[in-house]
Length: 508
Ligand code: DCP
Ligand code: CA
Ligand code: CA
Image (tube, rainbow, N blue to C red; front, side, top):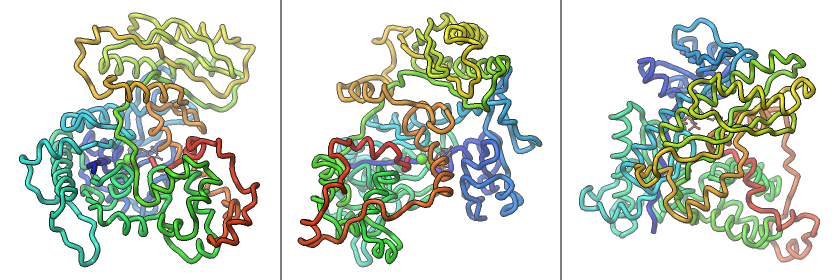
């Protein structure tokens, strides 16, 4: 039995702005990126304001709403900040978003989590999984053996801590409450959490008691949970894979049920159905997930291998305008590399430009004292890539990579990002090939989960336009007859990996 906690900050970008600008949390507030809301606080949610709404629509719904635009970097490489008194919003055609403020706050929060529990996996900019199993047993005498937070239970269930598993969860809930308190006392941010026997359950229940609350799921409640949550709210099932599985149900079942739960899916399909579609290994994993079983380990992620700054802009033949974007990207790279080298005592050796399907690489300036030095190198890389001959352009990116430590690794304080075990090393290698730009707008991210969270926005936009056909891959309820009639053409190649299905997942 493991004890896993998932701690997630409440309306994260908004809280960063509340604390920075001294605005009380009771004031409705949203964070804006160009014209759209990317984060909405709980006071504004109460007034009906939703993420992704347009600023003007949100103001109509809630006239007292305070809108804070995210920082941007202008063409001169200056970071422009906004506050509650800002009269004008930035021009998308002349500047680039900078999310560095939230990355810095994220780093501070993660350090607090790590002080309590070293088996920690940062899952996105504002949430992390903690494996509390060992800690629960080693520190159980320090904490009262009572549950902290909301405990999921059947109507007449008992809250008595009568098993070892419940005892471990109760201690886990106490530890998570202490971590949340420490985050609030130190930084002023509230967070919510889920405490359960695995990552999937901890994640899904972490939103049950928001804001500023936590939820515990005892083992005996897992099967009930699997019949009440929707499949697509489960980690890993928010995207293409979840939709594919839901579409296995007959149309009338989808129509009749408000919630398409894992239990409902199991009633209408069998492991063999999943094997035909996803291959034997993946099917077994999915089938387990439908029963609330998830063996996915909490893995400390390693330091990122590259820092990417990218920008998608209106197609232009004007080299001057391309150079302005290049200046802006150089500033962003400079800012983020400086932050990274303070945190990890390392510096990049390579600077790469990606432009019009061409990549050119050179040595990263060292020591690098200004964004101008990067801009000079980037300009010569642009020339090497073809200069004016590759115009018109609509996309540019710069990457700093090939990091080397600037101090003896043995003297570094072991941080949660440093490599500690073989498993973690493997995780870095797997991560290193990941494309960390948003595939829609080119926005760069430091982790694939951050990128996925951001891509949600584009998916939602797409979903508004596309009517998803529910008749794609359908199967009848399982009867011996329908099983034997299954056509081969219904199956997707079993060699297709789970990754193919996770590619468009939306949950993080
Ligand atoms: N974010 C974003 N675009 C998205 C999703 C999220 O820019 N499509 C950013 C803004 C959020 C932050 O990431 O503040 C964390 O995302 P969450 O999904 O955890 O949402 P919040 O923390 O804002 O709200 P909640 O209290 O529901 O967790
Ligand atoms: Ca959050
Ligand atoms: Ca989150």
